[in-house]
Length: 354
Image (cartoon, rainbow, N blue to C red; front, side):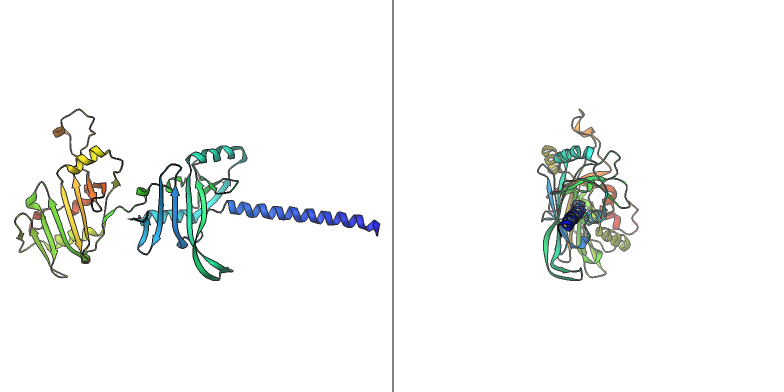
């Protein structure tokens, strides 16, 4: 019996070592999968996305019954939200960051990375992905997005608590996704000013400050009739070009501004706002909601040029504007808004094209 005991002990020891090695391999493999698990499988379950840099810039994107909301107040650009969700869906591992450069990459990320938190609706009970009960909102992923490798193919990412950073890429896309994770709230906001369909428009008033005799108001009388009134003398047009008027009203279905001008110095911004306006458009829909825009002249040259104000040329491509109940100062293009800046003369029968 004593002779058989030693082989049995050796065999038991070998089995124990084999089991430990197998368990360690399985654990390491599982841990690596968790550390590299950045993708969101079901983007329809995502309820909130929080993005913040290492300074004070941050944004909270939330799904609501009426669409995505920025910081609980502003409507988000659905196109940009779709790009972000698609990015999260298609994230794949290109490679772990090499050991030789890992410490440098992580150190650099500590100074420039943005933090991303993803919240999803997940079930408390999930049986084989078939029976899902008691849904709840859960913080499902937290990771950091850094810059790009030297070949610009991919983006450095590191999950919170993980030991290994990875180079992530998008399937079917060559480049990097760092710029998509912007913490600037204005980058996510919708640029729509008017989005009212023809049948929902109750009235439109267009005012020309420099040509008040061209100002007018269009009111809906019934489904097929409108009243056109010149504001200068309250003259009601007995006849007007119906096709032009309908084309004009249809243009309010989608009108957007080009950019926010938050970074403009306050003295210059105040000077513009206090100057005489160019145009003011006020639209009232059939729910009684009012949407308005007030435009201002945009000068082409900066203030540091030592030339008289009257000689500074006007920008013929863009205007400044106040929108969203005068809360936002933005840049708009004539190319976009010319179709709703028609003078009253434009609607008179036989009037020339403008």
